[in-house]
Every structure is written in C-alpha cells, then in structure tokens.
Image (cartoon, rainbow, N blue to C red; front, top):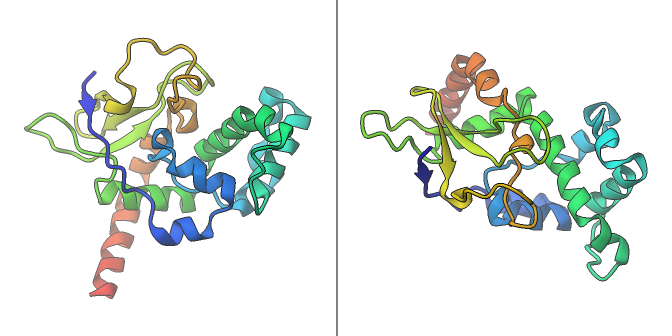
Length: 205
C-alpha cells in the first residue's frame, strides 16, 4: 500500500454555516475530512439507522442523536464526555449509509471530480481516488483510498501506521464509516453523475 498526502480543503464555508456544533467540529477534524455532511433529515429517519442500536445500545443511540441535534455543544456535560465516542460512531455509520444514497453519492462524486481525495500515486495512472473501507465491521481497519483504474488500495498519509489497534484513541477514521461497497456503487452510476456534473458546469458558464 502506498501513501497519499491529503487535501484538507474539503468543506465549503456554506457547508460549515449549515452545520450543528457537534457536526461542525466532527467534519473539521483532520481524521474526518474525507467525509461529507450527513443531513439531519437523514439522521431523523429511524429506518436509516436500523441496526446501529444493536452496536451502540438503544439508549446510547438516542443520547447520541440528541447531542448531534443540539444547537450548542456543552463539553462540560458528563453525558457529552461519556458519549463522545459513541456519537462519533453513530455519525460515522450513518455516513456509510448516506453515501450510498443518490444524494450522498452526488456529493461524493463532486469531491471525486475535483480530485479532493487525491490522485493515484502511479505516474502512468493519475486517476482520482475514492475513499473506501476494507471491512464493514467497526474497529477492524482504518479508511483507505481506492483507485478505480488500477483497482488498488492505498493508505492515506494520515493513517500510515502499522499499528491499527485502538482506532479512536489514535485519532484514525474507521473504514466502516465508508464501507466496502461505496466505490463500486458510485461506479455503477458514474455516467449519470458525470453527465449531471458536465451540465452543471455548462449552466454556470
């Protein structure tokens, strides 16, 4: 696996203005810059969160959603301190599902088209990367970068570390926050997104 120097400018100022406090800090964290914002409407639909309660617990899920939805962030609150990791997990697992929706894939495709995730390190390739998880199971592996042309997986510079244990303590983004099927799903709709992007560019000229 190779290494990649990441682009830190992945969130627009308009994105930031719309975010709730916890989400704002979450997406500005260097380990999460490859993620796109998950709308609160998506999080408010319990169907989209099916199964997550089995991982974090029903009461913890409710508390995490309450923290995410707050218009302020009370870091001095014991509940916030206790549930910070759980809230990060909930938002991350929801993100893996959101980027498989048409809306989520559209956002990620725009980043991909701008090469915001970087480019393949092979000189003969230079294809834009897509983020990927090599396991859908939480805590197994950190996020990687996938080249659609070479079909190779690379390590971001951010996670070039042989020790993959204790992902959160080391501040690394879990691969389950992107999932194993995202690049393939986006590739299936590539032509559709490409045409939409070209039409958008033409209309803005």
